[in-house]
Amino acid sequence: MARVKGAMMTRKRRNKILKLAKGYWGSKSKHFKMAKQAAMKSGQYAFIGRRQKKREFRQLWIARISAACKANGMNYSQFMNGLKKSGSTLNRKMLSEIAIHDAAAFTALVEQAKKAL
Image (cartoon, rainbow, N blue to C red; front, side):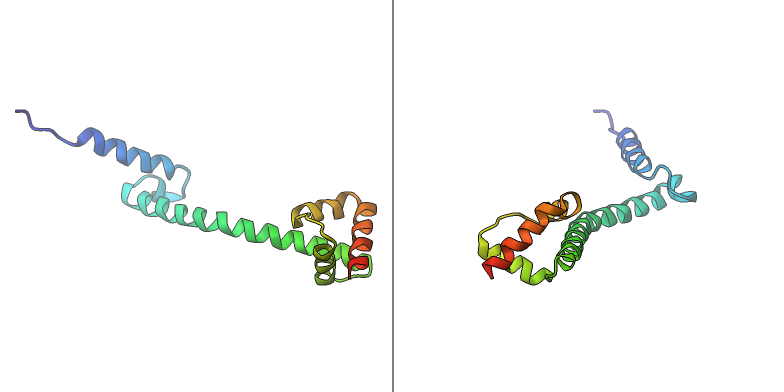
């Protein structure tokens, strides 16, 4: 029986890593060992970044809502409490979009929240 060598699969595996590391600075894109380390680290950063993105967007929405509330003479926590008590089910993303694009509608929401308190 013929001996099986691993050259083809080894080359495929190495090329896959080198393709991931394409465009990296210096030897990180040329040498397999350094490319493997860089690709692993970039994967970790990407994983962490996908979670951080969710946090950062929520933070942005809250900042926008808070600024719009202050312009209408109310603070963020009272506004959210009033909306909850009034039975409104708008999420922060939608509230932020309303605050940016439709100031009159946001003012109506603030009045609704004030009545509920």
